[in-house]
Every structure is written in structure tokens, then in C-alpha cells.
Length: 334
Image (cartoon, rainbow, N blue to C red; front, side, top):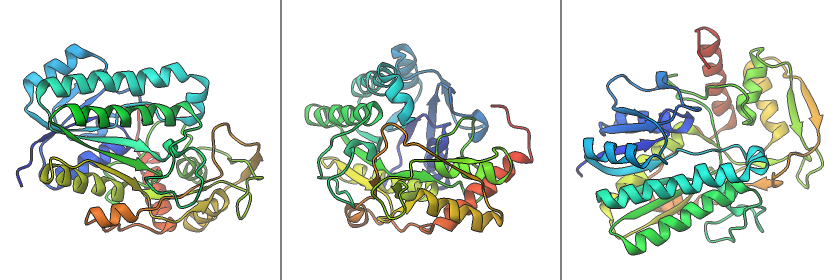
């Protein structure tokens, strides 16, 4: 199979940079566009074509497509913090949905045939059953999930009208870091539980807030399906290969392991791996959080030859902690 040049939007971000690594490890040519609002250029190799700016910038996109023979797009660029989306809904619809409309316009005009989209389990809202299946109702309870679902609909309609196919990968809770420590989660003010917990384990925080202890779950805290970022990156390679091999087929796939861990269970794992307890503070619930989100990954396993390597929570935590320790030992500009 020929390997077209892949444009990765948001490719300097946490998940995007791992996907860049996965494609580069398999000798795919890539280019990146990122506005560097949260992404970090140091996570990208020097020989990768990098364009700085927003995908809402139509002229920038025209320049990219004029200079690069883009055959496929993997789309990560957007805002991802659930509580912030509740506080700033118009910003999320603008950055996630309206900006994606600009990207799709440019892609269609340039004849791009394949688009792989970074979607989310938040499209399901509070699922009627767990594990949640791709065909279950999509009823997002926050603007973040709603903005992603709108993009899925744009892709579906565009695929019906134009000569392109798409994949929407609905991520559950992405965590961990590249085992070779080439990339990991950076920046300040993270709301991701494992990132927050390993920061506390190395002394960057003095505690971890447990946001809600009265959920209808086995220990009262939220349950999530945590997927290692490198396993997720591998799924992107396989998904794009599938889109290229079957140009009339679209993909909508949950990306998770099909098992959940509560907040307290994750913190127990951090205590084990770090060999020191992380202080916990019990707080009230956070707006927009469903009690339990666990993937049915049956379709993912059946559709792609995906063999995840890091399915136990201690491995995910261990790689995240190794990355956090690496950040401690080098100057990092946030």
C-alpha cells in the first residue's frame, strides 16, 4: 500500500505528537499544523514540515495544500477541557466545530480522500448501559461532547456528498506516555486524573482532588476506561490504512479497553507505582461528569488488527510517572 503524506492537525499536542511518532515509526510522511496554544514544538522532529496557525485560517490552509501533496488528514486540533466547555460554550463550538468546517472546506477543495477525526466518548453523555456501544444513543451533556458530535455529523454528510471517506475514533480516557519517553503530556493546569496524580507523586502538587464521592459506582467515585496513548496511536495507523484500502467505507470506533477503573483505584495504582502515597482531598462533583464511561471495543477489535500492549493500569501510570520525572530533570518552557 502506498503511503500518502498525512497532515496532522494539532500534531504538537499530547495525543497528536504520539500519533506523529507512530506514523513516523512506520515510515509514513507527515506534516503538522498547530497553533501551539497547548502543543509543544519540542515534541516534533526537526525534519517534519510544521505550519503554525489555526485551522480556521483559510489562507493558511490554502498555503499548506499548495505546498504539500496531502493525501489524508488526521484531525486533533481543538479544545478538550469539559468544565471549560460548560463555562465557555461558544468558544468550544467555534474552535471545535466552526474551525473544522474550515478544514473540511479546504480538504474537499484540495481533493483529500481520507479524514480521520479525534472524537470522544463524551458524545454519549450519560450512557444508558455500560459498556457503551457505537450505536447507543448520542446525548452529550456538555458543549465539548456536543461540538465533537457536530463534527461527526459534518463528516458523515460530507462523505455522502464528496469523494472522501472518514473515520471517527471515539476516545475514552487517554493516559500514559511514549515508553521511549519521546513524548508525553505537558503544560500546566491539567485536569486529566493520571497526569494530576503523577504530578502530585513527584511533588509538583501537594494533593489530588477527588471530585465527587457519591456517584452510583462501586466506591462512589467516577469510573473511566483508561487507554494508553501509544496503543491509541497504533489504532490511528491501522484505521487510516483501512480507510485507504476501503475508500467507500467509513469507520466509527470506540477506542478503549472495555474495562473501567474508579478514581480511587487509579490513585491506588499511582501509590503502588510511585511507592509513596499521594494525598487526596475529597471534593464535590464537577459539572458535566457522567458516573461511568466504559467502552465496548468489540467493533475496534473486529475491524482492525489492533493488539494493545499496555492494558493494565499500572503500566499506564508507570509510563506517565516516568515522563513526569523526565520533565523534572530538564528545563521545560510552558
